Image (cartoon, rainbow, N blue to C red; front, side, top):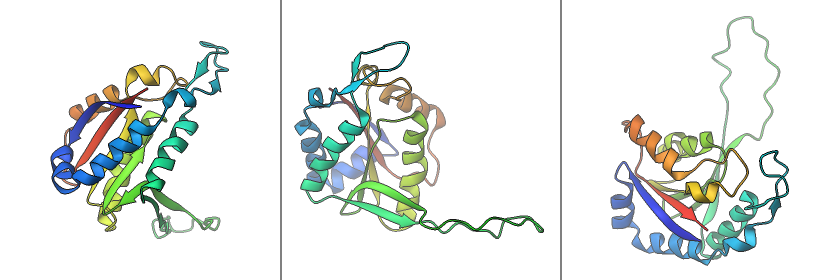
Length: 189
């Protein structure tokens, strides 16, 4: 797998490159070690491409994850305690089920990494919400988001989002005061 593109959101490349050049080298080594051809294991059942072999996001995530774990990165879970104080008077809610949490895919020395081969909303959530939450809770200072470029996403199931779309939206959105520095890598096979 190669890193085909990169986007520095809120000074992400500069912040991360200056503080964690060794961790950036590890991330690049993890990605370059993945043989994406071995992850083309999903037979499409979609009307637009029946029987076509596609890249499996689940398999890609596993292959990338194994590389991070091997290099000492870990997942980070934080419990969610949902408030009930905002319910209107008289509303009787069913008891909330326990066990809710948020999870950062990989974390090492206060640098968080998210790998996203899914729907567009998850890319935006990772960078504009989850990473901010993990920074506010004291787990990370900056983040790296790994997503496919369009040509790679075209060989996955329909609906997988891609780097070019994500960057356009972040550029159009602009930066907010709560945004943390994030480096976004666009990967290809």
